[in-house]
Image (cartoon, rainbow, N blue to C red; front, side, top):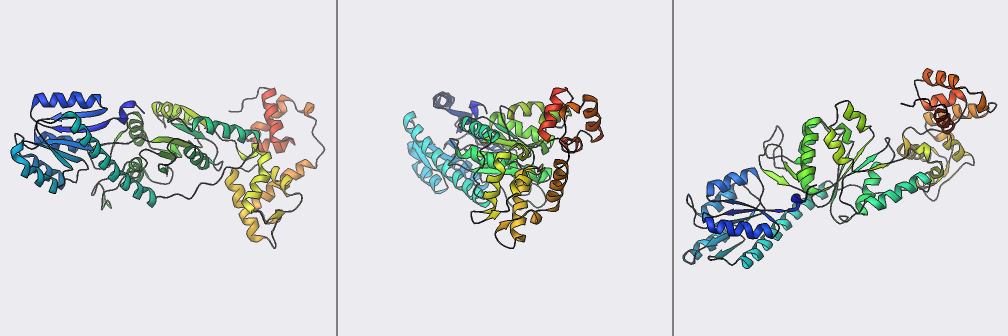
Length: 449
């Protein structure tokens, strides 16, 4: 995200051109993004198109008074904190303005240091109110506590090492991996090891909602924006502001929403559905997908500019079939400390390919526990697809071992194509392990695409 996304927007409403310039120059140097207007109508137009945390309003304006402007802002339910500037003869009006919601007032000629302190306090008040609303939204969407990641295999040690390196940065992270490999757990781990760990971790699954609802979920909506929008709603970018937004299955995001996501990643700006008012949020984005996004870009289903925006840091998760050293640890964790298993269960489970990965293993262990007579996991209590897959593997294992030298390139290619390039069924047909098949494909330079 660009550095300008961290600047604080400030609205200055005063028709004195000299004071306008002085305030604009002063607050620009103080890290604000001041927008200067000379009339109440210009102020209302500006607030319709953008959210301003703080507004400095002169009591005397060419069209209506600052007090009348404040009353109009109240009816529009704007979120800014208003500071009134007044002459000595209008103190009563300034006090009336505070009764109507102004946070403070200062008399002219104003001292810039004093005004800066009041603006800082006003922004702190705005931030506190926004934080409270943000926390309420986060509580409503509170996720289950993240589970501890389990693994000691070389593949998982590389994942842990990568997490420790990339978590402290604020750059976007893309997690790639097959379904069930634990992408959400990795996203939680990245957040918990980041500099924003005390701030919200908010997640959304792009595959779980239709396009219109997903847009409302991510960016919020105004009351009446569409049928069923009976009240104003914060979007997830607002709720996650200052923290981490985890977008799961980002490859499912429709192209119009991809464009909107790209904008908020570039400059922190977005608009709620049904609103023309520009809002800003600064989030640490973590995205996940089980798709090949590069192929999606080439097919025209994913924006190339967004792909490179989220692909700054990429973490690839290994499938369970490449984590033999972790399978026993995972079974023990899913079963619980009071459970054991029949002696040859783990070797048999290692012979299965686990297309659903860790999620499938957990569900299989849960089923075996439910059907167990005691507290011992037995193969016959595992799902049929697992036990049938094991029987197929075991039947291959009891055949005479294949001599790899007898497997010619032509024979391997023939079987590979007959099985539609499915490595699991090809390996079974050849009577070799999946790992051996990979080595043979590399050795004979057989395309794996």
